[in-house]
Structures are given as structure tokens and as C-alpha cells.
Length: 130
Ligand code: HEM
Image 1 (cartoon, rainbow, N blue to C red):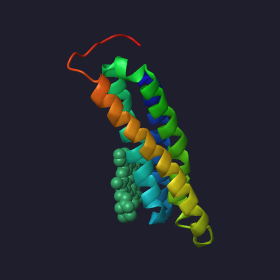
Image 2: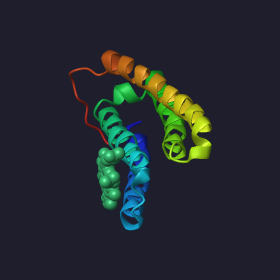
Image 3: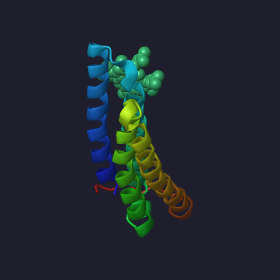
């Protein structure tokens, strides 16, 4: 599972950085929250999860690891869309549906992640190629 997480993270890194460059060059700084969340909840957090699952493959390659992957990564794009939508007055009410739906799925995934960490991340680190 580790490499899959890291590939998803790299895509969010490109999107987050592109948005930062767009904001800098147009001075449309109202997208800063979307930019910060894409970089930190998308790139940084997802990459760290990928590194954890790469170092502890037993945690990634089980049903908890798969539930975590899908809950977090299905929730993430909806949550990110909501960080743009809250900046558009006409979309504010609708944005909250995306925030609670997306962030709710992410939060459920994170609960699974924490359970998985406590159950399957143990002292011994296994380094292997996949
Ligand atoms: C080419 C790279 C990047 C550019 C051009 C860029 C540009 C910007 C700009 C223009 C702002 C708004 C500043 C303001 O409102 O005064 C901002 C805010 C921010 N950026 Fe970036 N950024 C880049 C990369 C990153 C990365 C890699 C991260 C994190 C991993 C990051 C995290 C943040 C955070 C946390 C904020 C503050 C958001 C807020 O105050 O609401 N940025 N960035």
C-alpha cells in the first residue's frame, strides 16, 4: 500500500504547488486555505502515511489498511472542493455538505488508521522492495 499512497501524495503536491503559483501571480490570496489544505492534508499527510505503510508493510497490506486508503482518499477530493466552495458566496450552503461528507470519510479513515497503527505497527521494521 505504501507506494500507492506516495503516488497519490505526489499528485496533490503538483496541484498544491500549482495553486500556490497561481495565487502568487494573480494575487488571488482567497484560495490560501484550499492551497494550505491540499499541501498539508494532501501532500504531506498522505506522503507520511505512505512512508509508514512502506516501513511497516504488514500494516498496509491488510483490510484495515485498505479501508483507511479508500475512506481517506474518497473523502479527500470532496473536502478539498469544499475549501474552494466556501470562498464562493453562492456555494456556501452546498459547501458544507462537501465539508462534512468529505471530512467525515477522512475522519473515519483516520480512526481506522489509528487502530491499524496500534494493532500492526510493531517494533521490527521490515525493509523490502514493494
Ligand atoms: C511553489 C510553491 C508555493 C507557492 C508559490 C505558495 C504560495 C502561497 C501563497 C501566495 C500563500 C498565501 C499567502 C497569504 O495569504 O498572504 C500561501 C499560503 C500558505 N501556504 Fe503556500 N505556496 C507554495 C508551497 C507550499 C507548500 C509546499 C506548503 C506546505 C507543505 C504550503 C503551505 C502554505 C500554508 C500553510 C499557507 C497559509 C495559508 C493561510 O494562511 O490560510 N505552501 N502559499
